[in-house]
Image 1 (cartoon, rainbow, N blue to C red):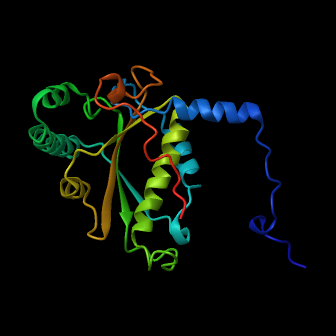
Image 2 (image 1 turned 30 degrees about the vertical axis):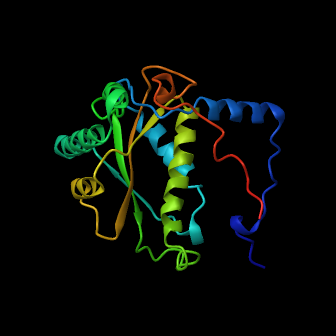
Length: 222
């Protein structure tokens, strides 16, 4: 008789105690969108371990549509910085009065110092998953990529690393710099490294841009 494969043998579910739950709450409280990095290079083995953990993320139809492109080259990074400069100037022009003055002081990216930088795309043409769930909601593929990024983010924070998500960019600029296929949809540009400072309060809140609120927390009943 053939032995059952490892995947067919259910593992005993772990028990997460109060101490673990307290640590998890602490981890979530100290997760920050980091913009201020140390220039120390990352341990490549540690980075690979983070990708291994992120691969455990859920995805619609088990499609795993995430595609990461590492930006190491000077020209590729310069293209991203130029895109940010253009988009940030346009965003500043949309503000007025005191809000514009405050916006001009905000630190909104770590592009010059973060040792590891990645563009993350969603492969909308992936055959993996056989279209399950994505035929009716193609955007579920994009959501799957976001879920993986969040898993990577939390795992990185647990190892003392910071992650910054730069959204003030033109997706077409990043896709061109990455040499991305046309079926890849840009989702995020991530800066990763050791943070130069630690805070449990978001930087935008500390700067007076926007405090956290309970808005959106109420669960509607229908």
